Image 1 (cartoon, one colour):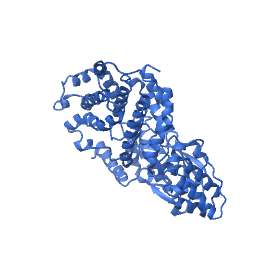
Image 2 (tube, helix red, strand yellow):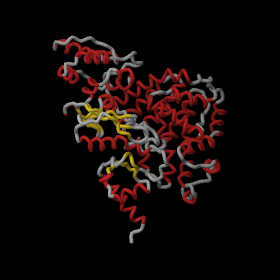
Image 3 (cartoon, one colour):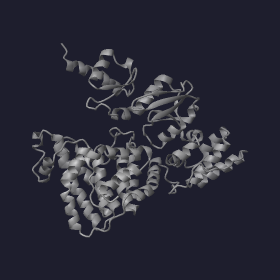
Image 4 (tube, one colour):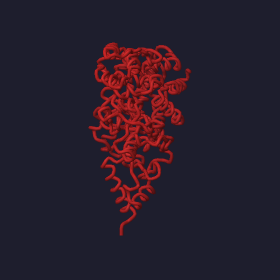
Length: 506
C-alpha cells in the first residue's frame, strides 16, 4: 500500500512535468482532483483565482508574496494565451517597459485584445489584468519578449499616451535611446498618417540629444507632404546627454536614474563630517562593531545567529570539518563567511583611507568579498567553487518585492556602468546611498546581494569620512519598504532618510 509520502511524491512528479513543460499558470484540468488537493494541502501550489494556480513553496509563510511576484509574468502569459490565443498584446506603455528591461510587477497589467472584456480580472496581492477590447497591431508590428506579446518599439512609441512622457520620463528616454536611426520609425509614421505624433516624437528625440533622428523625422515627413509642428512632450531637459553610440536601455536607464536621484540624496543626507584624523582608531571601531554588524546583517537575511556563534567564528574556534556537529550548520557557515568577507572589506577600506578612489577600489575588490562570503560553503561542499565565478547566469527574485532585477545578460553591461558612476561621483552622500541601492537593484549575484550591498555602503561611508552604519534587524521592514519605494516607485527619498537616520546626523 502506498504511504502518504509515496502519494505526495506521485503528485509532485505530475507538478514537475508541468514545470518542465514551461507551464506557470496551472489550470484545474492540468491536474486531477486528487493531485490538486494533495499539492494544495502540502503548500506546493496556491490558488490565484478560481480554476487557476501557481507553484509555491511549502515553507512560505501566509501572506508571503514571493511566489506570486516571481510567477506573475509567466502566469499572465499562459492565462492570456488560454483566453485569447495569439490575439492579444500588452499595451504600448507596458510594451515600452518590456523593451527597456523593466519587469516591475504592475498593480494593473493593461492588455489589448479584440475579444477583451473591458473589465479587470483580480489576481493575488492587489494586482489585476485589465483586458481592453481594442484591435492589436498587425503581426509585423509585434514581437515576443520573454514570452510576452508586445508591440515593437516603433509601434509602442507611436501608440503610447502623451502623458507617459510626463509620468515615466526615465522609461521613455531609455526607450527613445534604443532608436539609433529614424527610417523604420518614419515609415510607420507615414503609413499611419501620424503627423501630430511625428511632431511629438521629433521633440522627444531632440530632448535627449538625438538631433539627427529628430531632423530626419521632420524633414522626411514634410517631404511626404505633411505639416509638422514639433513639440517637446517632456517637462524638462535630461540631466545627462545620452550618447548616440550607447543604445542599451539598461545602461541608459541606470545613468538617468543616478542623475535624477542625486539631488534628492544630497538634500536629505547629512554632509560629510570631515576627514578621519586617526585611521588606526577608525579601523579599531570597525573591528569593535563586527559582532553587532554581523548579527543584524545576517538576521536581516533570515539567518538565526547568536553573538556567541559569531564570537566563536571570530576567534577561530570553528572549521568546516566539524561544522556538521552544529545544529545550525547553515547559520555557522553564513557567520564564518561573513567574518571572512568583513576582513576583505576592511582591507579595501584601508586602501580607500590611504587615498585610493573608492569606486575603483570596490570595482576591483568586490568579487573577492563575494568569494570570501561563500568560501566556507565551498569548503563544506555546500556549493561548487564555480558558483563563485563571476555574476549570476540565471534569473533571481527578491522576497516579497514587486521589483524583478534585470536579466542576467544585462548584468554584464550594468555592473561596469555602475562602477563607472561610482568612480566619477564626487559627492560622498550620493556614493553611500546610490552605491547600496543600485547594487541591490541590479542584484548581480544569485545570493548574498543584501550583505554585499551593506558592505559596499560602509566602504562608501568610510570614503566619505562617516562612521560604519549597522542596519538593525528590528528595522528590517522599514529598510525593505524604503528600497521597494526606490525600485518600484522611483522615489529615493525614503531610503535616503532611512540611512540618514542611522548616521545620527540627520
